[in-house]
Image 1 (cartoon, rainbow over the protein chains, first blue to last red):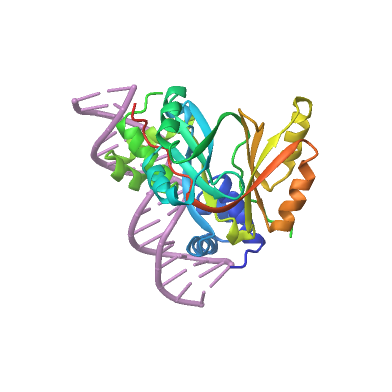
Image 2 (cartoon, rainbow over the protein chains, first blue to last red):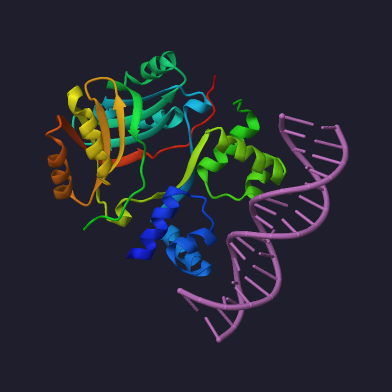
Length: 148
Length: 148
DNA sequence: GGTGAAATCTACAGGAC
DNA sequence: GTCCTGTAGATTTCACC
């Protein structure tokens, strides 16, 4: 799919505020409401927009500790590990990466004791390296048009 | 703020689909539309909901390579580094963590050459350890109620 | 891609529990 | 304080050009 200037204007606006009305979006993009609606639907159907989500503050809902956990896992245990991780709601993301770690996990826990228990529940699958998140100088940002 | 069962139902629904109408949300939560609207506004004003965003597929918009970069930086250079990172749209997240790395960055680049250039632009601020994301077995999930 | 009317949704009253 | 019913106003969704 070709993403022109209007499409990028739409994407930037909707990434910043996912609940903007079509009327607002149309005004920002410089198109009529139906044209904006059409473009948005196309972007969704093409998979450019994967979905919409509310961003919830973990601390406000009782998750006082956030951590990144790098794991080195032998090949045979990987499927079992992933199955286990999928069952754990505290594991909010898992990516498979090159380098020393096989996986990098992002987890949320109520407190340090909870984090310790969580690490204890997965560290027989391989080595774990746990880093506690102290602050987030740059919180997840919208994607911008590549300079090309 | 106390988050009861209804609030969690609301949060789960709105995390999964941030564009659900109040009418839909009300049906799922089991409240009237105005009650749902009230609760949603409270959650936003209390900072429990930090915002709403469309999730865009990086590959679909020309960012073929995603990577995690751990950085070890001497204290005096940290502010300069952060200022630099904030100017780089490819750096879509930066967290300050405990452990060997000072910061963990998430970056998106068009290709490997672009990634190489990006690392070259920041590695005089300290050591970098770059891991390329190969796949995402668990993409960022909604937060669930802590089991308590 | 634009225009206009019908269907739907949101916001805001007022009142019950 | 939290919720529900009514309604007026705004928004979305179609038709069609």
